[in-house]
Length: 112
Image 1 (cartoon, rainbow, N blue to C red):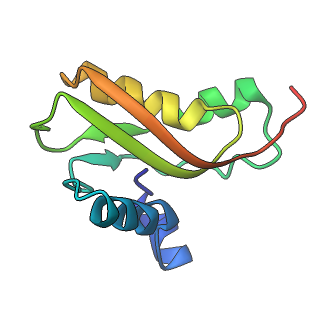
Image 2: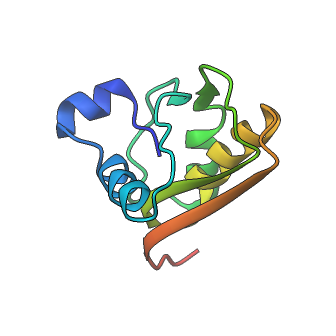
Image 3: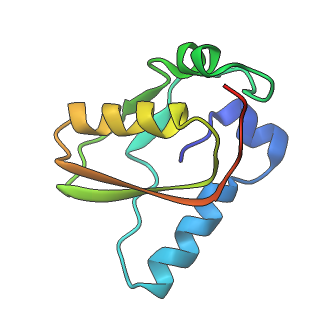
């Protein structure tokens, strides 16, 4: 999952990208982390309701350059409601990707 450049600068690394590098190497898969970008800064979602999370990430992603694959996997570290990965997958599918798998390391609980 891409991070906005502002958040990346604050954190210093993208944990999802580090996980993606491991999986790509281990399974000998291509890694593309430059085509899908987070085009606008979003608020931290901790403490937001499911509806607020959906609004927060709406249209937060863009495909910067064409993706040459029909089937890709998005990797993220933690999923709570799925709003972020859902929005990213929707953006990818709207750009022509046929199948988007979501690989999540942990699932956080949330009282919705």
